[in-house]
Image (cartoon, rainbow, N blue to C red; front, top):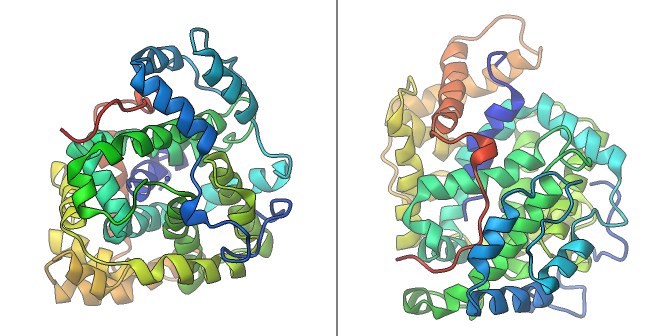
Length: 395
């Protein structure tokens, strides 16, 4: 993938993965949810939620969005023109937690660079489509403002993963800390707006969306899922790589407002928490089926070099046939057999474990390139893609 930078390759993958979103553990963090005196499903982001409710009710969000356009890098000063309460919050929040380990964050960035091909596919065809069978997430995405235009939603949402995957993501010159704080504001706005939607109220089983528990579910559909698949695919990783990858995600979800006590301390704890909060809730919904078709339909815009049946079967391969059936993905048994044998050989060759280039190597390579270019050709440069606070629900 020499013609595409790591930054470009990860673009669509993390965009789709977040549609819907470290070795030294947070001080005092509990091993898994359920051991704390608090419940992540009844924990939101009280201070930020109050701030955004006031901004929305007072019509100040457009002014805030305009002011924040120039606030991009982690070391940028806060923009002028922000309401005093919001500026005071951001002054406190726009920094790494005291327990963040910069050495591990830098190793995580290097790991992202070295394993970009697998991460791209897993975030995109795995996490992204999985988000459509997480009922609460699918319904919240569908009935919020972004659900009406999934291409625009993906273009905005990918910025989170794009900035997190940069080599300088957590450095002063990087952008992820600012991006995470903007995303945290968006979440707070959605928590205020969605309960006002009668359509969302009619289909949902929670009073307020995007609790700490919901964010943890999204983390497990991204970080934990990807880590598990890399292991299943026998992609070589050092213990330090694995620890650093977890640490990156621990810092990320802390910056989104998840309380440290809920953040898993180890991969074993993350797997246990995922089995508790993610695996049992996966299910089809009308909203999720439409979102999945919208996301997969984006591929019709360019020539991927493969059929839609191949794309459907790759989703089934990465996730499961059960999820493929839920989403109504038509079968292509010839493509399924080719993927089952060809993809492991592709990985083995890329990792230097197979001396002879396998049949189908170029097909997989071109498929990945085409998916990356699909998002790159969306007509908007990454630096022009802005995370903005919504002011309404789905029209």
